[in-house]
Image (cartoon, one colour):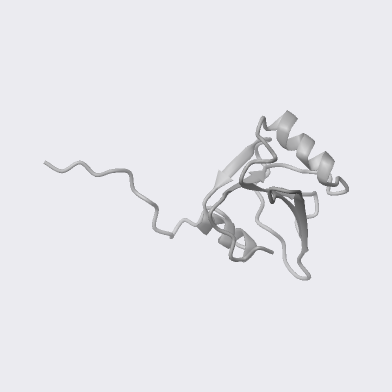
Amino acid sequence: MLSDFSGSKVYLACGYTDLRRGIDGLATIIEQQFHLDPCSDALFLFCGRRTDRIKALYWEGDGFLLLYKRLEKGKFQWPRSENEALGITAQQYRWLMEGLSIQQPKAHRKMEKIKFG
């Protein structure tokens, strides 16, 4: 599912989402619960109680693209603690799609600007 996705923001809808919702229902969650624009250049990811399936919603400029991925074995490492839209990096998106946690303790972290002298 968009394994080579880049160039746009990616948001995870943390917590549980009813995956019976379609485009309109997911767009409503984005607007009303997260106060974000579903028609922006962003990919929004949703996961239900069973962590083996996710839905993605993306605005292509002339309509929405709704994607659905079901893992045959394994589960997605989905953050459940907060009820927010969590912005993630392209690397974190790749980790998620590979079945890994978005927080990799051994990964090199980006650094803030370094002050010299």
